[in-house]
Image (cartoon, rainbow, N blue to C red; front, side, top):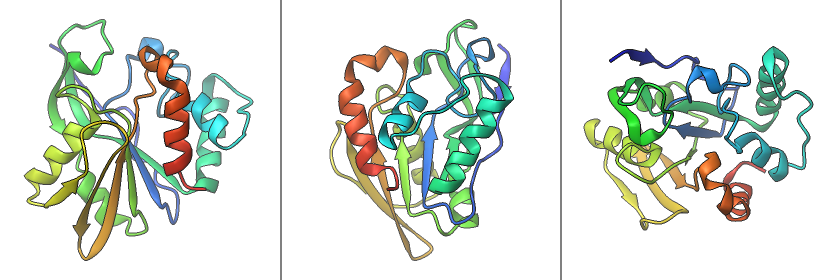
Length: 195
């Protein structure tokens, strides 16, 4: 099986307050642009536009990537994913459940490097390969204790890193298969994205 390495660099604006973590980007064949949540079936950017009453002008290509980066600079939102390297059990599939994790991303290293981040939004929770599951496994591997409130989104948690409290919020996935929960996802993201 081919091993894929995460295609995007960590995106952290100066004084970022929130870090959004997914699992791993969809297949390149599904990309509309080269930045986070590029998939044709993902409703992530539609949801962000609705949260902030903002209309993105570009839907594809370099202009779309640049427009989203500039917008996130204003909002102080950082992006990365919980998987650094993986393979796909089904080569044509983009489902999280078909990902075989080779290496998790070192999120703790990112948080140490960027002490302004105090809130993490995890964008999936179902199955053993989800942003929620992989992130909390990462904390365990780093011997960092944490608390988690319940097991259904929104799931709230927190942990202490070098004396700083970091809150976590696991929200509904923005995968196209979850479009039936759009209204609830919108309510959740509106509450936990920076104002």
